Length: 303
Image 1 (cartoon, rainbow, N blue to C red):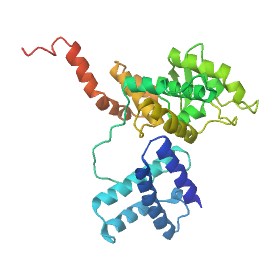
Image 2: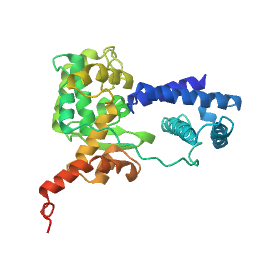
Image 3: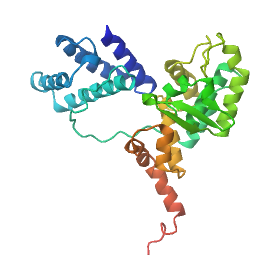
Image 4: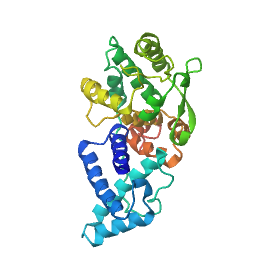
């Protein structure tokens, strides 16, 4: 059934790219299963077929017929809206039926960010003497050096990296291409992986995926996330909610704290809107305040 595979793909997205907890994912699944049951009663065969009036009627029934609180309807709408945005991003659907619907304003959740020291610990967690961990080290280093989404990372091809120019060519959301500079340490680790590890993983001469699994196939988001959670987070002493996407947030925040231009960060992240990038100005505020107080000539003056 279309509902099942659409929901399974969305759940994988929540776990791997958004780093949502098991309880949060379970709550999303429950809400969306209830939503799919409603759609099926209205003759829809998939989430893709949902119309704006379907969503409105579903929320109305929650509030009026089932006596649900407004907060419950807002939470359900949040789950439904995220699902339809995911389907649109993946090219499964061409329209978002929730785009015209209003939702109660809530405080924006700031992304989880690692400190510079925590990032260093994570990057040093893999054992470079083990070939698969050397591959993982190259992946982690490249993510932190470029701010790639994990889906973009595992989709990279051999031809996407230009070592001479020190750049990586990325195909992001909506098949939009962008070029991101890569720091020398990450390039050096990537070169070591390509020279010493990837040839031994290759099973098919025509496979041009940059990062390969032990079976010679392209690494998947799930595979990378599982190895991060089971191997490297415990070694680095990092919280379990840390996800591949955390490195993307940390990349942007650390660039901003270092004085990078917000629009340059927007370009590197591949954000369509600057407002999406501006969330990092709030994440970095405590550190920016410290920098101001320590360096600005008038910060310590009370006169």
